[in-house]
Length: 270
Image (cartoon, rainbow, N blue to C red; front, side, top):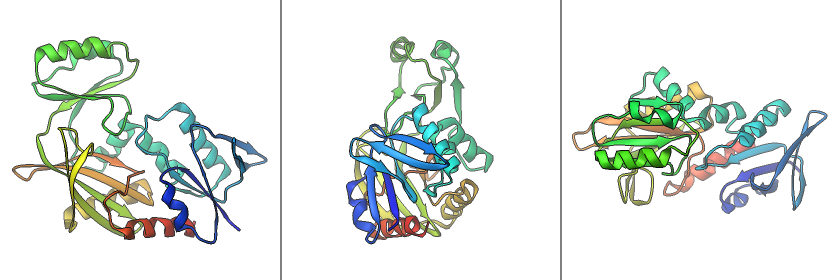
């Protein structure tokens, strides 16, 4: 019986892999070993030698250990969804934005400094958004609307030893997620509780994907060699659309059951 190893993720995934030995481990408590070119994963519950890995570690600030593990997966040549190569590129926010820019897709222009000590050189017209490092899920982000707030935030951020990006605030009407799995595309229109897109979602609606944006997400999927990928698009009151980011470990909450079935089928096909 083939073994599917699920890294983090929702508990319900086990129900989608009948006929397989399904093991689910958390990266926070597991260690990875390569011996004689074979990959083993160890935690307090035992040892797993996977035939395929289903990587669902999303919405966290990547640690060096995560990148080391992905490189071990590459070395052992264990199939992974998404592939380790794809995940390594997407885990770094600057790499993710550079990928979008290289493809000519519309992204938010940003300024960046490698140290918070250079924040004094990044101020732009209010309001603007400050983002620290690779944090996800709305963390490490602040909306700056006044000189006083900016001065206080600079003092607070001074303790961080990470790069900082500053970008113009987009007063968006909707956040639209375009989700591509295999050759299928879905779209969901969302509205958050506050200014942060894709955080504390209060309203969502499945919509018909627009041809232009279906083409865009498929272009990104092909370039990234991704089994699953999503782009988050901000739409303003006047209809302008800009990509906020892409996500190669996107959550499926609110999407139809077909998305889970399609993704689980891809894992099994590996």
